Structure formats: structure tokens, C-alpha cells
Picture 1 (cartoon, rainbow, N blue to C red):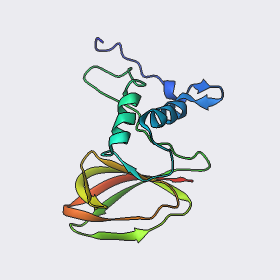
Picture 2 (picture 1 turned 120 degrees about the horizontal axis):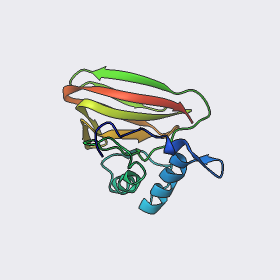
Picture 3 (picture 1 turned 120 degrees about the vertical axis):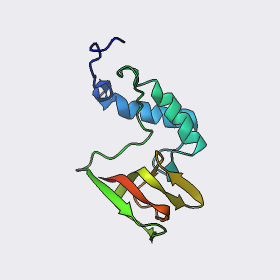
Picture 4 (picture 1 turned 30 degrees about the vertical axis):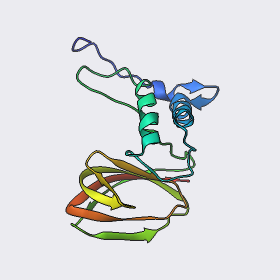
Length: 153
């Protein structure tokens, strides 16, 4: 695509039988990858999630030259407002196990790392926790910066 010819689109917000395409595509990708949506804590390193993410790459072909974009294989409730936060954690800090009963949480690792259930998640990785699921983590030796989104279940 020649420079200056690209124009963004909002194809993910177009409706299919009253449902946004982005929602339909995520659910189809989860099913094709053998996942049951909203039941398990999933991360960007899970094999099935990686398959779903590959499927979703085909839904975002309209990007500027030199760029790549794909919808992440997670959905958030539209039952209320969503809030974004940045968390900065000191090296080796621990977030004790706890539950957000009515919130789903998406975290993207901007820099540093965390250990979640024996799995190291580092820069560029993410983790999705459905509402009502307990979790905790330990910050890695370099600290952490996380962008996260809370959404009503």
C-alpha cells in the first residue's frame, strides 16, 4: 500500500445479525481453537489461545505499511463502563491471591515480568482473568509496568 493511501476502518464494529463482527470473530476463533470462552484464565502463551490469535489475524488486514494488527482473543462485557489502569510493581513484589467477583480483568505486560502459576509472562505478553476466578502473581526481578482493563462481568 502506498504511503498516504491507507484509511482506517471500523469493520469490527459492523453488525452481523445484531452482533458486532469483532464479538462474532472472537467466539468463532475460540471455538475453532478448542477453547470454552469465559471459563478459564488464559494467557498469550497458551497454545490454544495462540491458535485463536492466528485465526483473528485475518480479521484485521487493513493496516498501514510496515504495521501488523490483530484483535486479541478476549471479550469484555458491555454491561457497564470499563476502566484502564497502569500498575508499576517493584522487583519481587507479590500480589496475593484474590478474586474480583464482578469484574473481568485484562493485563498487558508493558515491561518487566510476572510469574503466574509457574509461568513467566514478560514484555508483550498478556493475561485475561474472568470475573469470579482467583489469581495472584509475583513480580520479576526487574519490576513491572502493566496496562490493565477492568470490565463488569
